[in-house]
Length: 191
Image (cartoon, rainbow, N blue to C red):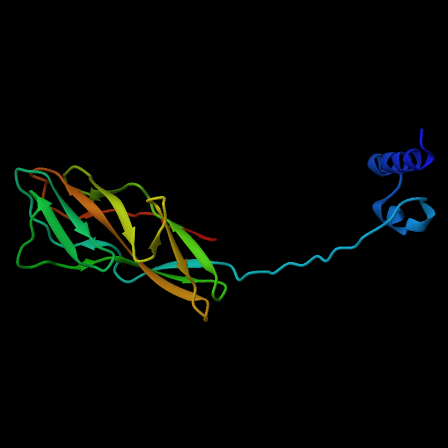
């Protein structure tokens, strides 16, 4: 067996069993091990400001909707405009119509992604009857990716950004009148 190999193997055994510390190994001169050479490499890290996200404004509000004997949808664009299809209708008093708005803070000029849900549910307020309604097809003012639930954005030079979220509400046939509420999550991460 090669003498240099057996010396290195023995030193590795001592280190792995804890009989000699890593700092003691580091004190060995490379020159004392015949045929061993060394190289150095730089090491560094950049610590980023933590990301934070805050819901602002009124939240996602589809406004006032009239139902009929046919199911329908209300599409709320992330710009805050809405369109209705099928048995869902609007009336002269639209009520409060708004897309959800979010503020993001983090590392200046960094890119980030959000993940929107596939489904959220709006339930009748307590004491009221009515079947839950589904919110699907969430969209955002950020840049779409190949995944329909993931959207990309860029933090500005101050490390801040704002984006909006819309979605599609499915209204049941003869949906019971009343206020329906719910929540939905938005996940945020650096790219």
